[in-house]
Length: 407
Ligand code: DOR
Image (tube, rainbow, N blue to C red):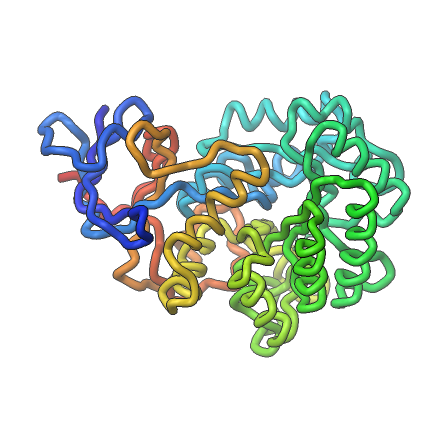
């Protein structure tokens, strides 16, 4: 059925917000100045900001293998609630997608249950064990990129071989840069980034650094970009807005890389402001309440789908540090472009993958509202502007705030 979203605000070419009445039919945006239509499903958005659906290139959906933490269905419903219409799923699953057969186990579930677009990463090594290469050549036609996220590939000879295969197939390697033997210290990340950049220089592989967290790593990536290497990097909302100074010793504040110093947090913000960070990604990493109850034994990871857009909007856009245009680039356009995913746009004739954010009314994020199967968020209790009130994927409603009523 035709949908009309009255009283939206959208980004205009000059970077300002302008009013629009958006109609959607058969999955496509058909007008930005729609007229009343008694037969349409219509909403009054009351000035909500309608933007292209977010694209999150770093997510853990846990299925197959760890369904008690999350499933493709619960994870993608949570993503939809967060305004994310496409995501890339990390391969630390059981089985690990290191062969065509193992990947098929994952894509069958995605095909059956996902409510937003899900693009699986292929693993770099068999079982993500860092010992022998996965069937990267066999996987290449079916994945956009490779990663052993959750751990770094520490054998640099093996990593170099992987880079050469990735280059041959024009695929990206997304690195969880962490050098073994250094725990989760800043040095673990810094030494890994340094060594991996050397290999990128040698091989010319397209390389992407996941969740960078230290000032030194950002400085090295800044330099590598200046030198012309084909390198991109992502920042997470938690490394942008939280630091170790005020973090309680609670499972919901434990992740890898961990929250760093105030200076590292500021350097991460600077990286976003000056373009060294190309995109923002969640590292959505659900774990059960039981697993997270004891800090020392808790696994690393926090959920992030539902708070990415509100936290970035509140922390960076509303404070005037970045523009609406840059916001859309960071959470949607740049990740889609880099990983060769469909780009979402608010324009006539475009696919209706979009989200409406309530940017006028702040509210507190609560444990009760979480749609993920896990609730390990350090942002519970935080107040944000910009929560999604409506998300459309291919024109279908995949999330709607209960207070948004049809008119
Ligand atoms: O915090 C993290 N959680 N870091 C990782 O590297 C893995 C992830 C997970 O899978 O839980």
